[in-house]
Image: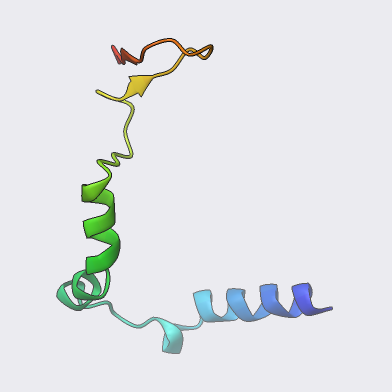
Length: 66
């Protein structure tokens, strides 16, 4: 029952215009500052281009050619 009511509430919030609140991007970036610093620190990129590929078995990483 809880899952069904959660889905119904989520759909209501998605499709009812009163819940469609605009996002002010500078405020969003300020609140995400810690997460952005973390991704930069650990060199996370969401793309495969230039990432190391590990074949397993203790081999050295090979640069991705994609």
